[in-house]
Length: 151
Image (spheres, rainbow, N blue to C red):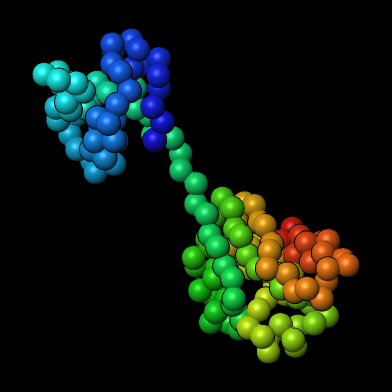
C-alpha cells in the first residue's frame, strides 16, 4: 500500500502513527465510513483516506525454492507454490551432467530449475545455491536454467 504525500498535504494531514492504523483498516476490509483518528480530536473517514492518500498497488507474488529433490510429486508441489510468480528464486545446485549427484544430495539441476519455473508460469527466475564445484564456471548453471526456462 502506498501513501501519497500530496493527498495528505491536500487534506492537511501530518504523517504519523495513525497511518498504520488506517492501512490496517484498509487491509482488513473496513468500511469507508470507519472513522480514523488522524490527530488529537480529529478524525477522517477511511473512504476519504482511500480516495486521496492511500492507494493499493498491484502486489507481487514471490516464490522461493531450495533444498528440493526432483521427482514427479515434488515437481508438482514446486509448480503449485510457484504458479504465476512474478519472481521465482530457485536453487540450481548442479548442472544436468551431474543429475545423479543432484538427486543423491536432494538438489535440483539448472535444467530442472528452469523447467519448473517455465511450467509454473513464473515471469522471472533467479537461480542460486550453486555447488562449489562450479566456482570456475558459475554462468553455466545460469545458462542451463535459462535455456530450460525459455523453452
